[in-house]
Length: 141
Image 1: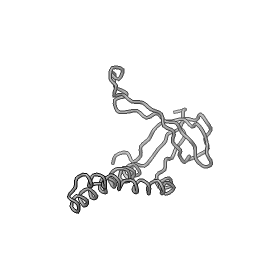
Image 2: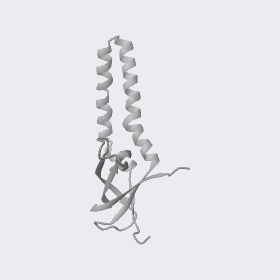
Image 3: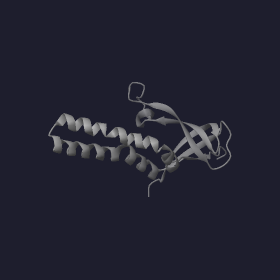
Image 4: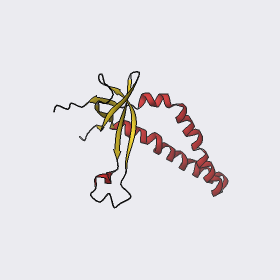
């Protein structure tokens, strides 16, 4: 079986109640390429992630941030797959009823507004459903 978690190394930058904020560096696949200086496709960015610690942490501690792969697939489904199905269904249905490509296109994109509005209103549910954990890196290894 393949790895069941996605892991990134990071550094604790703050605490917020029972969660800690961790800064991680996210690299594109080509950022480690020897020709990245000549290519504009190389990408490196920093992200701040709130995660649930498995122990006590202080600012500056190096940690490993982990998320179960199943959460990644679930997030992709909510963010991309379901909206795609909704858009295609609205496009076909509207075109079938009106015969107008313009109306079908407008309705199929307009239907995304209530969908993503509902996603926004359910953000507390998603914050509880999708979570990161972190554990301290043992530097003595």
